[in-house]
Length: 134
Image 1 (cartoon, rainbow, N blue to C red):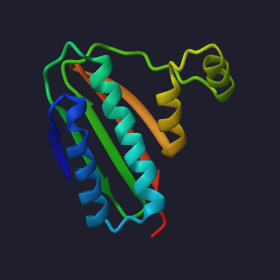
Image 2 (image 1 turned 180 degrees about the horizontal axis):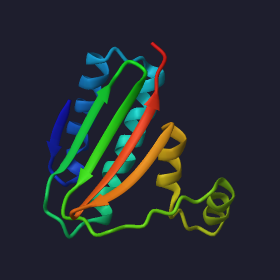
Image 3 (image 1 turned 30 degrees about the vertical axis):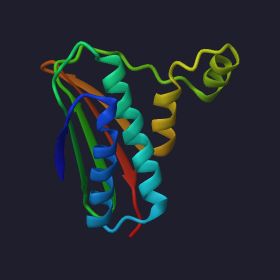
Image 4 (image 1 turned 45 degrees about the vertical axis):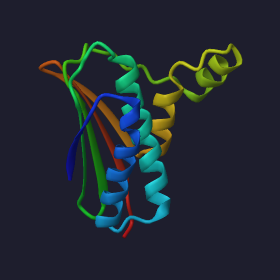
C-alpha cells in the first residue's frame, strides 16, 4: 500500500491512519504496530523538519511478504544527507550535554530490524524493515 502525504507535521494524523489501515490489512499485532508507528513518525518528522525547502509531498509505502514489513519513505527534491548513526554511548554523551542530535535516527534503528538510506535523482529514500513472525 502506498500514499502521498503533504509535507507538514499536521499530516501526522493521516500518516497514523494509513499505518493503522496497513496494520489491519496485514493483520499485524500490537507488538509490531507500535514500533512501526514510532519509526515512521520519526522518519516522517525528520523529513519535514530537515528538508523544509522542499514543497513536494512525501511518499510512504508499507508492504509485507508475511515474514517482513518493508517501509519506504521517499522525500523528493531533497538535498543529499550523509546519515551518521551514533552509537548508544554517543547518544548518552549527547543527551548529558543537552544535544539530542541523532537520537531520532538511533530510535528508528532500535524499533526496526534494518534501516537503509539511499539518495537517487534528488530523492532521499529511507527503507525500514521489521521482521514479523506470523
